[in-house]
Image (tube, rainbow, N blue to C red; front, side):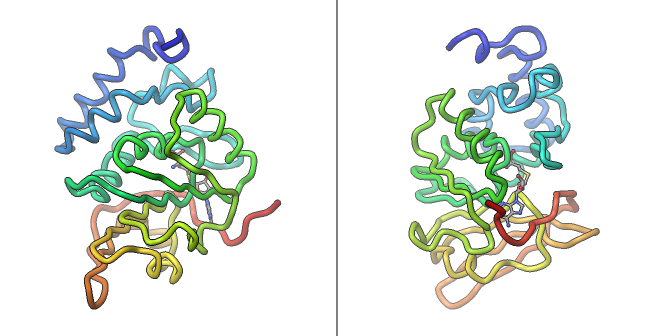
Length: 219
Ligand code: SAH
């Protein structure tokens, strides 16, 4: 680990472990997820000027009007998607800076992540490369379409809010798979969709606040 990864003071391993303790206090129970979050240096995913705040319970700006989700939200979504299982194939919609994809890379065998803003795809690619993460593949595309060529997915996670589950994502969810997303416009709720043999079940969870999912992927 070089110095930037190791960090000092507010970006040190000790600060990261305090973040994990806080998540545990807030009710996150998945120790494999907590171990992953204690390993991934969140501060390298945000601007240097904000690095000292990377381990606070904050959503921070990552440019292009987008934000990296707060640690508690990342933990909540991934805990819900994992539900104690090892994930085979995972799809993330909304790569942003790549932080959640990096944590997910420790929980799934293979990860695909789709982002509509090409500059963020490049940013995320550099971040993941810096951490030598090799089981995440990024694609510049509109996540509404999912990634048919790599489906079915055992877990699908949306990092942007939509009013309904995109049809393609329902189709690309494996039987027994779990899809977690923020649902709604102004009032949003974390929502879990599970695919059964015959159909889908939907569970509404906590109120949340996410950037909206936007149609199209400008080149
Ligand atoms: N998981 C990210 C959080 C990113 S915020 C992280 O860890 O940093 C949500 C992201 O969803 C933004 O980058 C936004 O550009 C992206 N997004 C919004 N609509 C999208 C769409 N239709 N397809 C793909 N990405 C989308």
